[in-house]
Length: 353
Image (cartoon, rainbow, N blue to C red):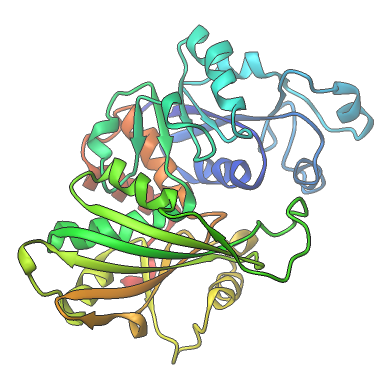
């Protein structure tokens, strides 16, 4: 495709930063600009790194409704224009604004200017035409105006469940989520020393069934006072009573570009091991696009298989969001082609070659 797809990012927070970086890495997309409300530490860091400018040193900054331009001027942070102007300049918007704001942006701007949009997990499903996952239902997103991504946990969970389902055929899954309580740097949840149960079934199981209605899913969730990564255990049952062996599961997982199969013997003892390894790899912000899956955790239970995965919550949805751009804009027409292009530009799966 000769013409690059023009993309904007609304909200430069934990996810928005990574979406902007992800788009900038795509050779067939152009990051037109980012939009935010206040000169946050993230915006200030961009300025200090000489990556922000009205003339596009790297990222052009636009201000959303309610922003006080004087605050940016006082810090000598260049502003390229308004959010409305950004919307007029793009083909598609990645909306990572706080929950509920995306729906308002859709009503006030996207509908008005005919701009396609992709919403993150914080918005209600009703905001979009399709609840989207790059591997599980890519084709349903083709040409659609509004797509919504699954949450970080659901995104990583579906990668592994979809892989098994396509290779073997699944009837049901039961999951347990050990969920980090907040992102690094967040203080709004307070300082805690406790585990907190959530009422079953957890929304990730319900969301999985929305994307993959042929698989019966249920699960429970436990909040934990940590910040680097969730851990999910999955008990999967094949169709027609077929036995899933550890060897079968390992073969499937090892083939998936966005699943990193590891062992405890190699040093991957828990969630923090993945974060440290990503930093040692030189990944920006310590991000990892792949989910981690412990080979040591794969056990047979009768005909079922059980395994555990690590979810890098800040970065795991970025590849699937790039997939969503490709589907919505019809850049590639099949899941195989779309996900392969995303993987190529983000360098996903290189370690498997």
